[in-house]
Image (cartoon, one colour):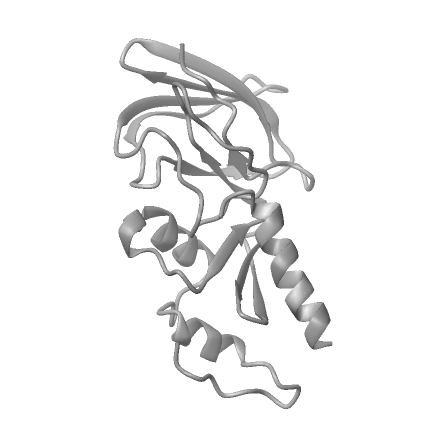
Length: 191
């Protein structure tokens, strides 16, 4: 069982694409979800609040003992041989975008604690459009986080186009918030 938990944590880290005190164990030898969250300074936060907190955190202040991976319908948190899954809100998916000029990385599930994009703390314009309806889901001027990403809560089961403009350069890429869609968009090159 312990090997399975370690393998699951290793798999979570591998799928992300980006690279404490002794807790009280439960009857099966794992720590409780509340204890896990407390150990990592996330007490009282739900999945949305944890995502917002970790994605906006300065890179130099990121926890080194926690992996936080955003999936289509849940947030997976892992540390050592413990993993906690928190449900995302119904009918919403978090998509994090790292536009770039020259340097990027492969990523499918956004890691809130290890992913770093090229354009950190930069002003950009983002437009996200639903391909099926033509509805503009996002149209805003914003600033990338210290990790070089900017995240948006989008409706489930949508495919469409993301367009980003930065200092006279523009790039576009497709996205999907289906169950098998990526939560980490790192292929949006600005030219």
